[in-house]
Image (tube, rainbow, N blue to C red; front, top):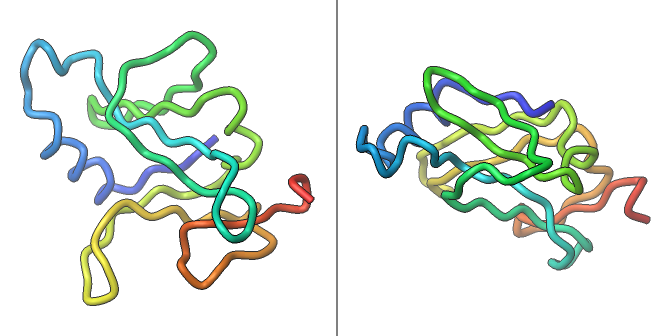
Length: 111
């Protein structure tokens, strides 16, 4: 399953203030077809759907749909803030090739 850093948890906590309407929401991390290398990451605030794998940490939930699980196995979700960009980032050991933009990738299973 996907690993989630403390920085990613803190950022999601700041995006989802402790309100009743947000109690079932979390960050959906998924892989979609597209980008220069064939696959790219998508992230949205969402609620759990049937078939999702759920990583729960410090009261925050991260959802991965069934189709994305194999692409994200043992990947790490982090949140970084710096000169080269700010945002959620994925370090994915399953990526056999990435493009220069850093948001699309290819795996041996997607070839």
